[in-house]
Length: 112
Image 1: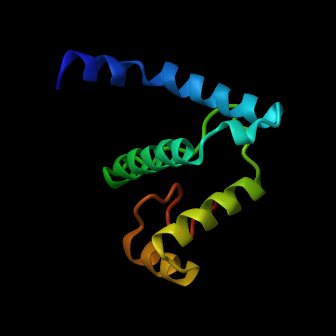
Image 2: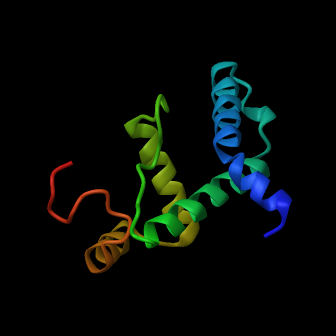
């Protein structure tokens, strides 16, 4: 790993805060069209891949952090987009979750 790679990883908390702030500003100022779809997809895909890698190591973190303001509707829309883009039906997701348990925040059958 190069020094610049190490610096970029070390700067992740600051980058995440900056990205979260930029997203919040775009929503609050109703400037959604100023965010290129390709750029949003690139960031979303990268975050999903990183989250999945951590979950596969057995350390599934909470999917969103402090003061995120994520609503149930936001989650449903995001999940729908992810499932559709991967060609996965909700039934298939349920079967995969039953067999793998990867990414679960609570034990199967546990309370949230």
